[in-house]
Image (tube, rainbow, N blue to C red; front, side):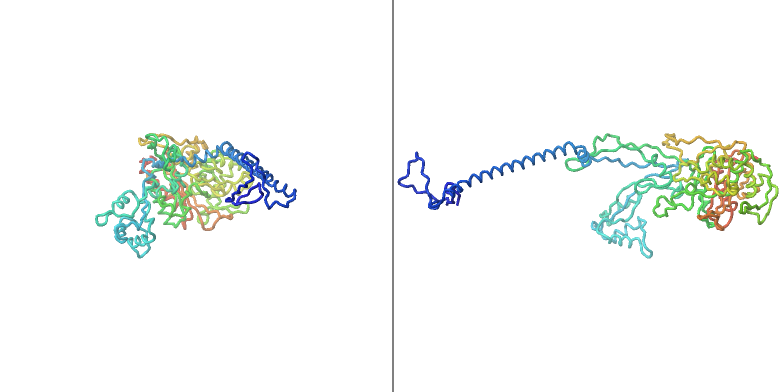
Length: 633
């Protein structure tokens, strides 16, 4: 039914009004019929009935205005949001779009090789492969593949099992993605790729190629080289300190995403990736390095020592010909060793040098004009100072030596004599000389993680006679083995403090220098006359003193032994733990090479019996390598 406002009622759509005989023509205004339902209504009821359509019309207009308002507000909101996106956030959205549609990356390029002074390769990048197995793709039985593959690989297996059974065990671990072996060289990978069973290639074996840093000499120069980790970053040695020289600079390549979703390089020109032929050359001599390591290992084993180091330096320019530390590690397998092996304690640890510093102290006193080689002091063998006892190491055997020259004091390594020598100059001047030599600083080497030497503060040193006394025979302060080599280098080269270093520079395949590492200008700390006299005094140590074990027939060698008690962490000195050392300089008539050996905590012996023989072995190798002619006395 539909509503008819004329009648204020609902009627059926099929209703048809019947025409009355008395109806008017179509030209006349039809009379309003009066329904039976309206009969008897009051005028007010009739008026209310006709007012309802007007109210509904008003409500319809209100809805129209409401819809219009909503549309206007929505449009305004869209306009504000459009302004926010197109203007306010436009830079951020543009950057986000670029990140999603473009990609910048640098092409993989191998690190530069590292070679020794003769051009022998010490470190180089090589291609290696990781072997994966996917048993679900095997076209032969697991046993057949294991039998064929086992002879080609070095498989780690548990005791009592064979390589074949170990391979079968791994094949059963999963249906796909099983790691079988890594770091496979090219020749092994080729054999695996061409492996056949019953004249058909084996399916289900995958070789993934990657670059790996390879050290063909293994542990030979590990203390100098360091290693490169899985992220292609150097973590020790020159691999760490010279990272910027070893990494080849290469511009980035920009990729854009194509319509099919693939990355496509932008503007990639021919010859974009160009590798230079530069190599990082070191000052190290591999032959001398090998001789030093063998000699050090032998003595450490003989005396059951905790650790040891050997350093060989050319005193003319500070070039290090050998730096060995034991125990060491194989940088190809660095992950199999304890973290303590990675640091080169020749530069990362300090120790009290003991009597090996006495020659430096004598040079300080002579440079200050306080003593001469023939100046005589009374050696009582034992003295007391501020409640402390100071005595010679051989006091129980020899006792007091009586009047002794400075040369004799150095020859017999007299602690009491050295106390008298250094007390002959003002403590303030003594402290100033120590600072001039660089104590409290580093040696400045290019090996990483070098620590500073330790020296008491000026006030404590000057106002305490015991501090002066203990420093006189090499205790009460600490230095690195590298800095001790540097100081003895000044005795060998006429008084100049050179910087020890292992990096020579970048060289091309023709041996021409492309770039050399700049070095500080050597500082003059002693006069040539002083150093010449001190060397002659040190020669008596080897000829007839505590360093006889370093003698080489036909060659003039200067040296100084050292046997020092190790300082305890909580203060004082250990009754058992010692550190032995010997420093040698050769040849005395034309001094050039400084050789230092330091042995930490040998079970027995002294600097003259433990460290001096190591220096002698290294010097013999040095004579052979450098073809040093015998001395003419």
